Image (cartoon, rainbow, N blue to C red; front, top):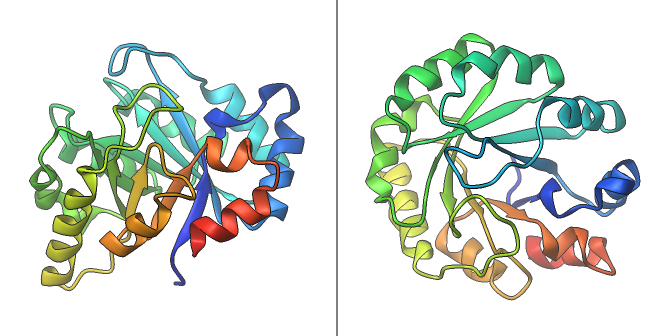
Length: 215
């Protein structure tokens, strides 16, 4: 698989023109779409849910990488699959991430695990063999448009070293404040999946923005 891959974050799109926005980034070379689902409990914000994912699925064949910022994701896994999600990423900060990972796997979906900026990266380590991606949050989850936190690059490096030590084929995703100014540092640290919202959807030239992010 060729890396890096670029995932525009739907949260930064113009929802009044969603199909047009998705076509624009798809034509611009985006590899997949990143969908942030928030419940107002795990994070202090609410974004969108199943009807939006169903609508997105109807207008694109791109992979839908769905980031669940939910206190209790398990009851909704089958519904997210039915809506069209290809992968579900949950948080290591949940009380029992192993059980949720197993539930996602049982539905035939790909699974990711995320850590917040202040959570030690070692929280991911017990689960690496069960994952399809490992996500380092480079902002506090819950709101788009935040400034990138540079210290999170050290977590990317530490995670990349552990993945290499175990001989795993596990891509590292980074999400939050990623833009054309810091993308090279993200790639250099070991991130292979770059989530970018405003840097792509609000660019006057999304294709160029994606190309620069990809390096």
